[in-house]
Image (cartoon, rainbow, N blue to C red):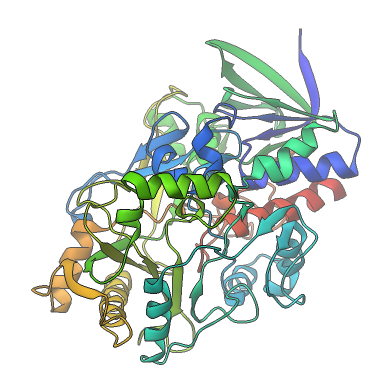
Length: 533
């Protein structure tokens, strides 16, 4: 027997959860959310510091890896993404960061009317409940997602912030307000010591209306069409193939890897790629899977002295005390995001606008590990370019819908990216050597003082860099005459009907920020467009 709903949403991450919530509020039509992963019941999801257990644990993430290239020393770089209710909001670093106003004005100038900063600001504010200082002209206070400041801090963080002033970098109390440039503490979606994922904030309230259903462990394999009109999807669940039909629309919110993968498996994408894998070309689109971008991030590590760092606090009786404090909802290291302090600044390659970000945390990780803290006192910085020019692709490797796609970011392929990451790394070293940090800095462990020239810094970046977990761009939004654009300004797939993409994949460029906030904004704006159709 055929199963019908009005709207099918593929993916329960930030955008998909928001769309489900808004449709449940403003229409009585039926919605079904299909999530490839399981319920978000893992204990460590709600513990903010639990990302060290979940992100690389394998059970609730897609364990993607990049294709090797000489630009990154032929390494395969792990690229995990959430495969669980709430998507990556259930496993990520919890940072709420919108980006620069110019990011969105750029989107509009690329041929996307209605996506300038003045247009998208109300959508940022709609989902946000800012708990803390903020200008109401920029910050939302009535939304569902609580945005808080850290309640646990370290003398190292305060010293790092003071030290930035020595280099002309001012303290900025709200990087999500009028101006991003400066240094300060990260804002997070943590409330009463717990992670608030997009399932908690948006999807579960939508499910309670009775108009939204959620099917977990449902891997969508294909969008179904009648002519040029999307009419439903096929999905695998419990080892069997199922079909679900949509009376109104199919909305792909599966993320920058899986949204283009689903389109390609459906015969929508580069004709040569589809034909090579024996997939009939329904609608040739060169841009599906192209324009992949991410924030390549390079960490430096120092040994600390005369201070207690997270390395020691995470072991033995000290950890027991932190667990006890967390259970009582008192300040605790268990309520931290992986980076505590941000620096948004500019290099000589971008005189008018910030182009780099430095991250600081009063902890260090064992060499070669994924978030395993060192045994001795340590601290670390991360350096990244905000708007990389290098771009890559996501391509299916076969017609098997359960096979992982090829992910090739082409990190550091562009010369500007190489020069900019070197400038960011050199600035991070200078900030660590400020007079404010002098009482606490023992010595630099990685890369070490023998790395000094630009060429040496670049080689270090090629060896040690990793993903920023901010994958975007593979279903780019743009004009119909742009051969690489996949969706229009209303997020409708060019040349097709009743099919939209609404997630980070539609971003023409990666914003100068983490991507959750912008993904929520996209979901909010998409919901209004769907309701207006």
